[in-house]
Image (cartoon, rainbow, N blue to C red; front, side, top):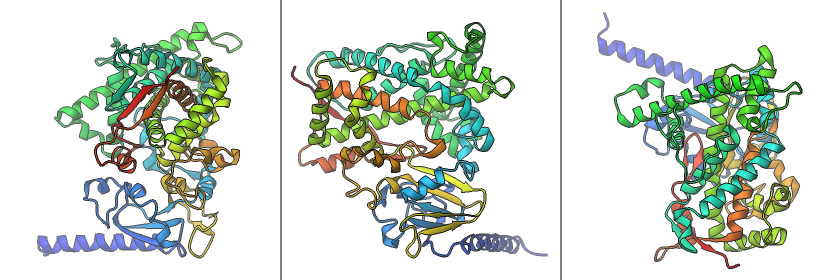
Length: 521
């Protein structure tokens, strides 16, 4: 009879042999792609628990090594080979290859790990195949020009309420230790108004009877919870640890709120939905349109949990990602005063002293280009995963050292490296520099992946860009934005200090301090 130690050794040997065979069979399918050996797949939860070193580079590798990771292998595709845990996967930084993959939502579907964002309900982001098509059909009508005009109007109102608030009205020069507080509140109140018809004032922080916490602090707490809920199992949030319990309660509060609102909206729409399918003004919001479109589908419509899942995704994506990109845009313009001056001059040439309206959106393209360039440098959605449903070849220039074509066996995990693609020097000369003029040519957007690409391009893309252009236009016309340097500090070191992002579910920076001076009339 084997001793315990001998039995353990045999079991361990069996696991090692099994893992070695699994890795070998996966690797042998790829011939031309350079191999990058790691202990654990960077997207595996175990990677977050191990210390970061050369054999466990972690998620931050995409940011820290964007300029050398692929170039040292003379390739735009790498085969990550995890020796201990995780899937063998192809990481790719070719914009053309990424567009090809994203261009076919059925051939290249999202793998199971990506669908973890369905914890409040199946939704347009965390679904595939025919289920995704159903979500998309119902959700898409919620975003139209009338919605975007409403976004502009609400953003304008909130800007003016912001600049007469206590923190702003006392002086013509302000130093804010964290300008994030303003972009975060703006994004929250815009999605609240345009998404849920909750028109809150800038200085208003109401409590809802359905919630035990103020809605704004609840959403912020939920945003902090999302990454942990994706990475860790639900039982973690039942541990008797105070901050975990606060997160669990906040999440439950929001879920209760959404389901109560959905029930109320359905009852309201029974009387409001006209024979021609039109809605009253109060229901022409993302929420109202989503519920109405679902009801019009009858038995093929979304159930309450699916509606809640989509609303949560819209709330989360429309709140956090827009807020962080806005503050990063202002920071980059503060660092690059010439670019700020150029966009200010353009705003004045288009508007003069006139009030900007939604009709001016297309005329303010240079403002949008600043937002696009910031997304390129700091993409909130910095990684995407796909997997082919059959053996498939993808082709792009310099995809591997010896070939422009890579054959992907069925089921291969493809990691679309958005940071690498957005800073690909073949497409973007001087890729680390902030140059909004890159987007002057309409064709430049062909390789823009900040909102994904293809049929699954972000539904809220124009919602976010209208909000951004409106807010930036108002602020840059009335305020000059600067950074405040410490003794011996340079603009480059300031950027490294304050715009160094963390990579979780999304890419975001920490608190960004900015100095604002009112422009002379």
